[in-house]
Structure formats: structure tokens, C-alpha cells
Image (cartoon, rainbow, N blue to C red; front, side):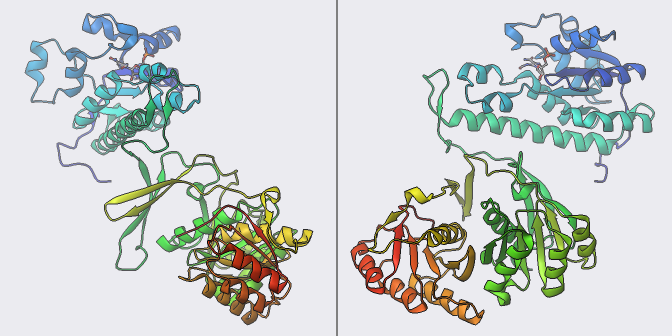
Length: 533
Ligand SMILES: NC(=O)c1ncn([C@@H]2O[C@H](COP(=O)(O)O)[C@@H](O)[C@H]2O)c1NC=O
């Protein structure tokens, strides 16, 4: 970042106001400032902590002549504080002198922990309200507005940089740093206000001590942090950037570390998310290969090597240039097999052994991401933009268990078929609708994705399996939604499918069940649909 176009010179720090809820690193900072000869000014609890450490500090209440009152609701809301932060160098010197306002050059402040307090399940409305910081944001705004003279830090993670910069500039802070921290302070205030607005506007019953809240507040506020600019969007004529949530969920794609490779593209990130979310739903070692947001091969095995082989064999043509995701550490032998065999856009795994990383270096362009595994977080809200609008929904976290399956045909699936049906069902959830998945021995045999008619998806799954040289007879089939007609079952029977899993619920279920019985196919209903658009 280049320096802003004002005077642009470094400003010496002679007087600092410290007012922090999170007292991490406070004493070390206060001591270092004091050693530089900076005069310290502070609010109640912060001043006590500094004084207890044997350092000299002046209370804000001594400066303002007002005690802190109303349980801290009013501490710093005073012209002698805000004037000290807002007064402009040169322009306001006379008025400051006339009113006895001393300049404050540095504000160190972090806010009442509203977000942490309201994240607790037992947080009462009263607790939430008392944790709405008023004086803190006001001071942050005053200091941040006056970045031409004043510096502001909002988080203990900035203290090291603050002290380093003071050392570097002989006790002063550069214009560039003051501007960057001013932006950070306004961003923090925006995040904080968004959190308050979202919390309060989600309340559906404020009469209860712990208020009832909807997942969908009257106003949806979100703060997203830019991770990177992208070379382009879905197509080269579109501009794009990738943002992450303020606090990304553990185990989510947004927590990735890129270990090597070319810059990630827009499509890489979208496809990586699909591959990673699909693979991390399996407990056993699994591999998912994604192309254009759809899995083109998925398998569960005894390790990453055999799961990759089986996933790849589903559709080697589509696997070319795919995104490969594993839910186990990737070993050197598997990494070598993959990279010697096929062009890969992105490799994703929770970890890599040294041999895998060493081998990947030979293909320097391949993007290698590490994402620490964590169980999917409950309550995740999925969003999708439409022109000038946004759709929100709770994430499709539904997992169907064997006990829930209802056998609707004369023939019941065998144990092995049940295992394959549940595997295919898990995969179908990540295939764009209309989704048809053929599977056998915990690996996909054919995937039909994104067709406007279900029977065509079924046909495509069969065609692909045959093209890949796989044997469909004896496989099972998953359909993400019910069959509106018997033709989907007829197509499956023609391909040799022996068991089917689908939600059920069609007007013509009886006709569809009759078709399965005619063909000697076992069929189970989940009662759950997994559309993915
Ligand atoms: N009301 C005020 O005038 C006021 N001024 C500063 N605060 C906050 O008080 C906290 C520090 O309090 P203490 O130093 O007493 O631990 C900081 O988080 C700061 O943002 C205030 N508290 C709440 O609004």
C-alpha cells in the first residue's frame, strides 16, 4: 500500500490511550511504550492492570473530571477524550489549547466481547446488551477518522508490529501504517455492528431470558475477508476475488494452505469445495475426483492408493484436469501414480508425507492444498446469490442411516448391497441434479449428472460405465430425487442394476415399485431428497 495523499510524514507518539477488554499482551505493550517515554492514559480495568504491573498511568476519569459511571456505560464519552483523538494537526491546535484538550497520538483499544458472549448457547439478552460496546467504537471511529495524525490498533496481534514500527521510526508511526490501521479499525467496527445487528434482528421472542432466534435474521449482515484476487472469474473476461468468512469453520475449504503450484483460479476454488465437502463425509479412506463441480469418480478403500485407483477407473476421460481430494494423508507412492498418469488441477488432502511433497515438486504447476480435517460444523448456512438477491438455507447436512431405509420391493437388498446403496447415496448428494450414481464395492461405476431429465442421467451413468470398461450388472443405483415414471427403473434394469436407493414420494411410486419388482430389483426409500442445483 502506498502512503495516502496528506502530509504523509511519520508522527511521533507521545501520549497513548489504552482501553482493552482483551488484556493479552497489554502489560508488555504498556511497558515498552513507557520505556519510550510515552505518557499512558487508560480506563478503569485497563488502568488497574497497568498500575498493578508497577507502571505509571493516568485515569481517563482524572482527565475528564467525570467518574466512570453506569457500570462502565459511560467512561470515555467526553470532549476531552474525543477532542484529543479528533483534533487536526495545525488546524485545531488553538481550539484544543483553548479548551485544555491534550492530543492523543495512539489509541490501543479492543471492544467488549459481544461476538464471543452471544456465541454461548446460554447467553441472555441482558448479557448481550451489556456487551454492546458504545464508547469503544466511538473512540475507534474518532481515531481512525483522524489517521492523518493518530494511530489506532484494535487487536493484540498488532502490538508486535506497533513496537517494531516505533523502533524503526524513532518513536513515530508512518503515514502508511496509520492509514492501514485506520482501515482495519473501520473494518472492525463494521464487523462489530454487523454482529450486533444480526444478533438482535434474529430474535423472534425477546420475552425469554435466553431469547429465541431465527437462523434467518430480518437483515442479513456478513463480513468477508479477501483471501486473494483471482486472475479472472468463471471466464477470462470476468474479474474475480476469493473471500472467506470472518471465522471460517474448522475443516472448511477456506482454511486451506497452498503448499505449491500455480495461483488458484475461480473454478479451482469452486470445484475444490465440491470435492473436499464430498470426501470429508467418509470415515474410511476415500478419494473424490471432481470435474466441473461434479464428482466423476469416488471410492472408499483401505488407503489413499486403492481409493484413488478405483475413483480414477470410473471415468478416466473426465478425471483429466480434475480436482482430487483425499480424506487421509497422501503418500509418496500414490502421489507419484497420480502425477505420472494424469493432468491434475488441484490436489487436496489433510496432510502429505515427505515423499509426496517431494514428488509433487516435480510438477511445480500442480496446486497442492492442505486442509486440516474437522467434522462438518452444525448450523452452517449455505448461500447463493441471484441478481440483487440472496438465497439462504441451512446446509444439506442430512445423513441417512441404514435403519431409516424402507424396503419397498418384494426383494430386499443384501448386506453388501445396503453398504453400496448408502455409499452411492452419499455420492449422489454431491452430484448436480438430476443425479444418478451407479456403484459397486464402495466405488462409483458411473455418474450421470446435471441432466434435465432423470432417465437421461440414468442412461448417461450406464454409457459412461460401459465406456470405462466397467461392469454394470450387479451394481446399485442412487437417485437424488424420486422417479416420476418407471422409465428410470427400466433403464437401470437394462443396464443390469440390482438395487436402487431413492427418496420415494412420487405420485407414481406404485408404478415405479412395480417396475422394480418386475425386473427383480430391490429398492429402498430414504424419505429424504438431495437436490443440488
Ligand atoms: N462507555 C464508554 O465510554 C467506554 N469507553 C471505553 N469502553 C470500553 O471499555 C473496555 C475497557 O474497559 P476497562 O479498561 O475498564 O477494562 C474497552 O473494551 C472499551 O472499548 C467503554 N465501554 C462501553 O461502552
